[in-house]
Length: 325
Image (cartoon, rainbow, N blue to C red):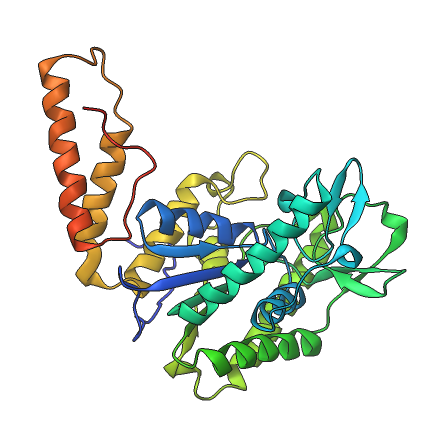
């Protein structure tokens, strides 16, 4: 007896392996998947400018990076004892103006390098609600807790989001024609906008993304849609798969969606390597009762051997912790 309606997802013709270079942009769900890719030691860059919720914000920063824009004092502002930029997330904000600009421009250079070298780009759209700053008359990526009265809130239209997606993919494929795109909609519920408003937002995102896909008859050769939103809505379909805030997917849900992603987007040839990495990660978290015991020293020696064996095959693999022999 089937207790769930499992969504059929075709396997990719351009799977990810340990030689792949992945860059991801988008909502906080991008962070969830990025953490998984990083945990299994894939070569990945996740949200170099922090969380970006809508396609216009993603387009702007891809364009900035590829055009070698430099952030200047005109692009930043001081608020609540920190320097901010409307084009990036608050996690990048800084108390020092010069350090902030240096950090932003360094991120642009690193992002350009990552985009030029990327084999895969994951774009996750979170919401179609956007805020336009009344003074500069531009849509921002983040409001940084600036008073609401300084913005006009509006729902991005399907057409303008389609155009934004087209622009992002066009400028990136121009400099990196072999890149593969993975598009998805975040399953995170933006209920601060309202229940009905959240559904309107997701509907516009889905319509825009699939509208763009339908306009791209050659998409099968360089990209595809991954149904993370539909997996949570239709396969899991229960509040037990949400975190305590009832907005974000729980760890169980994230693990399940990750597994579906691995099944369809990761080369089966690297499954054994992923298992090696996972075993090492678990061993590194091991905390002994007696650090100087012969048994623990033997365990550390074996762990060190495992790490060196893996690093011989993949030079880029490094662990934040290493065994202390």
